Image (cartoon, rainbow, N blue to C red):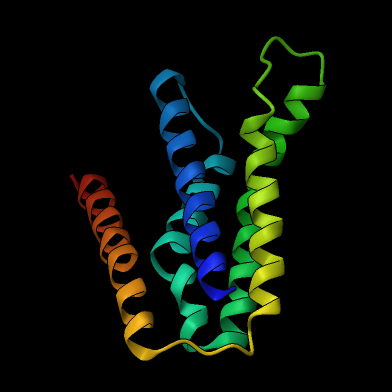
Amino acid sequence: MKILTYLFSLVISGFVYLLFAAYMTVASGFSNGPIVSIGFAILIFGFLSWFHFYKPKIGAWLLTIAIVGMYFSWPVHLGIEYFSESEYNPSPIEFLLPLILGILAIILVWKSKNMELNKWTKLILAVPPAFLGIYVIGYMGINMIR
């Protein structure tokens, strides 16, 4: 179950990150909602996806807070736009997939908080997203300084 939580958290954060990238290619400007959501997505992908392996209770709380924060800072607004009478009509997958994966990840992280994995499995699963998260944060930080 811990590995399923890990995979769901990687997929949800990667999906929101790539959705943000797709929106940025056509958008002239954004409010703070999508930027907060992408910050949560990077945090989930690079750190919280594997942190619950080492600190199950704190990791479960942090992952739950980050997933809820990521969803309510932007994808929920896409759902509101879908049901409203505005000129923009997003696809249901843009707000339903993060909702479904987020709910599954939250349920699984709380069900599996008492399970333990092998230390090498933890390390192997933690290294790739951590390095990729550090790279993305470093890349964004360097581009903000320029």
